[in-house]
Length: 221
Image (tube, rainbow, N blue to C red; front, side, top):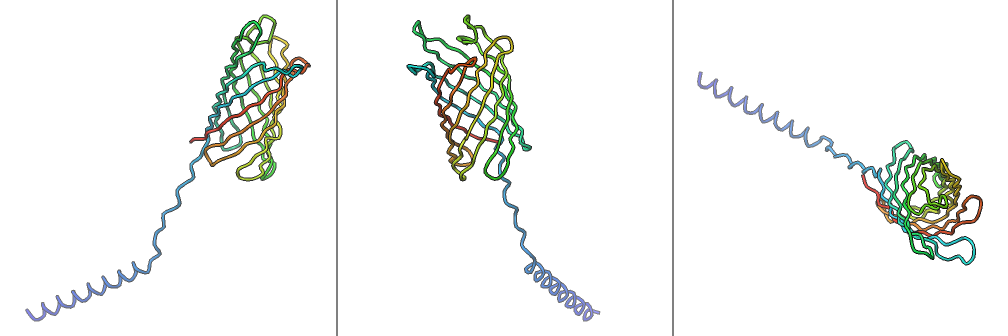
């Protein structure tokens, strides 16, 4: 009996070694599991800071004001975006400098016509107060604005902001202030860019201001 027990134990040991060797061979020949690449972070929010100056469109073209603009925008995946900005502006007068303030909210939709050119119509409602210039008494005003921007991408870094056309007017007053702007943007990376632009504006049908501005954009999730 002891002899048969030893034979049975030896056979079981050999079978166990065989199974272990076979499993090891199967594991060594299996395709290694490769982790998927990390998902690219969606940079849907943009903070913009802009500094600009206006000069009178008529002689002697002296400096009429300067401004700062702080803009926060959110872009959706389907081309829609929303933004809001606040703009303090210092107006120069012979009787003393005065301040005016703008705040505006907009909704836009970006249409990519091809890999290089896009159109972005935008509409918004805003409020201006302080040294408004809307009326001789500088009444504060609620206004509406429509924009149409066209951008041409030359490369990964350079974009020609070919035009940005604005029509703006107050609800309760005559304050037609259209403007056309052109500029260029340099994109450093996925997170930051710098732009400059120049514009020409009218007020109630008359030449009003020539503007120059520089700004920076920071994108974040």
